[in-house]
Image (cartoon, rainbow, N blue to C red; front, side):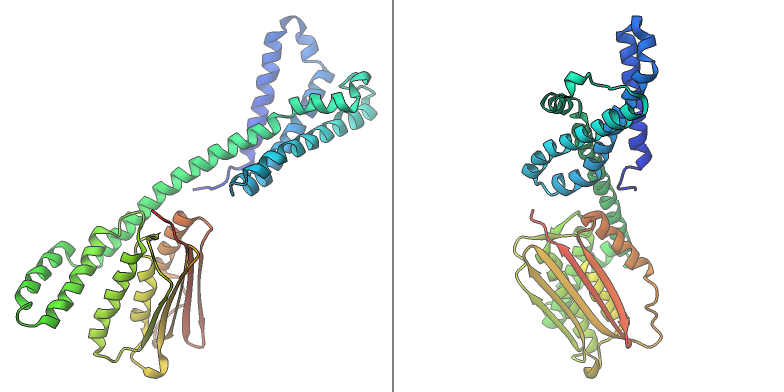
Length: 347
């Protein structure tokens, strides 16, 4: 999906506007068609359209993204008279300087070139140069927002199905684990507790991973349970420094994002050597979350390619947060590090 309107769309819009208004004037003045289609009439119509188009581009590509996109409405309103002054100056330069010195003809009568009148008149005629880009920009951003939401929903569903495929009949396992838990709760409380944790992981994957956003507390609880189960696997020989700074509060996040990094530490990293301790750290502050992971690489592992999982994660983050996130990974001296920084939303 293209997030920007191709430039030729803008050109086509103004060509159509030029033809429309020329045809309109011909229809309004059927007895003056020769005058309407005369050389100087078309020449000054062209200089007018060029002036409007130039200020239109200035507003669409610079003013609107800088002020409207950041909700700096007051500054945008203040920019309107500046844009109209630029339109007036450009039109004067084209018509009353270049065209006049080339042909000897003014578009405005000499008496109408008095600065006060000329500026007031061109503020009226120049208004389309600030109104059109605002309408086009807002309409296109609204369209992009809808498309991004649709793509985000699609990517979330893909991620959900990918997680389900990595399990063997999740619903069957979930029900079976509940039966095992009921059987073991009186025989071995610790084993029953571990089964309950595993059941919770499956429940999260099944019920939460296809949502647009989930509470950060649930995502962190999922990671805690995931790490707890791996501690059982390594029988207290797991050397992972896992830290969280800050409070999640009621903030929400894209689901099944953080687990990607934690899972890679266990899947590809060395975590059973006290001299090569791995680390996963999260910092929550000022409506943002920053995550760092670090692990030594196991022999035979190849980190030279991004992999499908990394690409899918990048796509999901881009659809969800646009350019408002940082995703980095590095390999140096057989140490693999990642960094993720993204904004947290509130429900």
